[in-house]
Image (cartoon, rainbow, N blue to C red; front, side, top):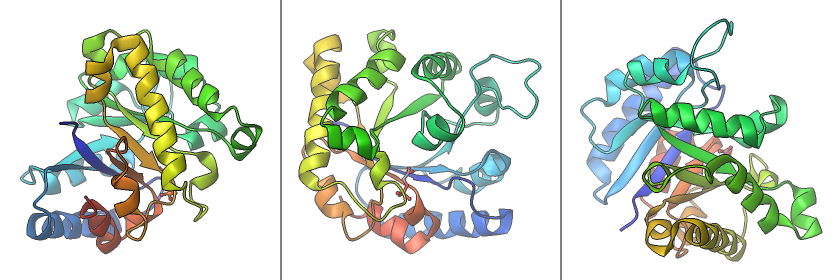
Length: 253
Ligand code: PGA
């Protein structure tokens, strides 16, 4: 059975007080209301990781993720955070290649391959984001585009390394826009990603990889998205900032 996952990406939102209040609410609601085998991941900004970790330490369903790491081991990179630092404070996951990082910080597939390697070397599990723009969706080459992102950033990995990666398919045209991919569009892309993994790593390994959907996922559309055969959960932005919405999404399985 593939791990079902709901991850909340806070992006650059919340003060410390707001973030800790949100975390406490999620911890309580998950403990009271969620009895399915789902992994919940919280990805606050770097500065709150340690404090959020303190609040979730006894919540066995909830894990901690960072939103990024640098593609160098250490050194003179003012303002940056290394994978080893994240591991040293007990972070378990790291989101890599989010479309906002690709767009605003010009992250390339090649650079992401280096980040993936550093994350794995430091025992962090990468949540690798991929997804096409509206332009690529409309020109029809979206499967090729996403395949290329995955091939260039992940296909150098060995089997045991790949098994530690979570993939998040996030069509850029659906992120923060209120536009969600239809269940058909989501399932089609998720199946295509799994097929690609199967061609490279074999069907057995492809079956084990969790592939999350992201992009305007909400309590209203999560049940139908999560019911798709190849959708193993969600990477949630806006709706992860409200405890009630986020926990309702978790309960969609
Ligand atoms: P959204 O963001 O849920 O606000 O669309 C998703 C994401 O960027 O991961």
